[in-house]
Length: 358
Image (tube, rainbow, N blue to C red):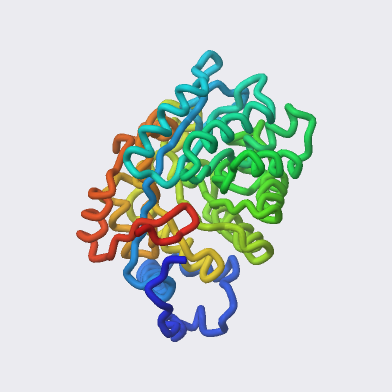
């Protein structure tokens, strides 16, 4: 794993951490109200975890379909009569990614009617057969849940088949806010908190690592965000299968939820990244900012407040863009290095599983 060497616990002089126990909900709520203290702790814990290293991955998104039977109120991507990429179109995108030395392909899409386990496996098999060097990071818990329902298989059976077809890891998206009261308002047809947890824990048990995520800044309360963080921490203590935590501020453009929400302001974004570092330390050590949603410059600023990863080059990004993201679809390795160095950190290219490249 990437690290510049652990430091002596530099934040241990703070009374909140002196016990050595993870912070509970009330402590995290109190810390939110003290931004300077929160930022100091987050920065010190980041330094303890990885020093001045900030990582990125050379990858490509392949959003293979926008057809979807879902009804998520925050989504601007889904269409009833949208596209479905054929195998040749998917492979053409992977070929382009390999020419740019990508180490990861991230494959996700809508819940297209009629697709079953065999279809999802065939996508993985086609990429693995033609580009065996590429790591396949694919299919959210909602997609796995949908595959299983459509195919008459259990979640475990589906993940076993996907893994045998080449699945290397899974994105921990579809988490949104892991509080069922909120989920009933923003994504009523999506899997429940417990169902999301079942998919994730099953994947970890079968040797498939996943990321973890949060979608914040819509109808949830701060207490809901903290409950979400504490649940992820509980899962990680049980399985150790999360590779990172990715913060995704809600994009209010072109969706049903947008009119009741607004963009999260810069200070709140910084506080959320810092809170994640403190809440999840040391169980989930890689905290990622989304340059697509925050913008490159704001994402760069987060490295001062607990973040140690800026995500991937992407090359193609349709989901955030349709909801109002304006940063484009591609950040090159050179642009990542420049952004990281301008913020006083050391850029390091990584793999999906946080191994150093080169």
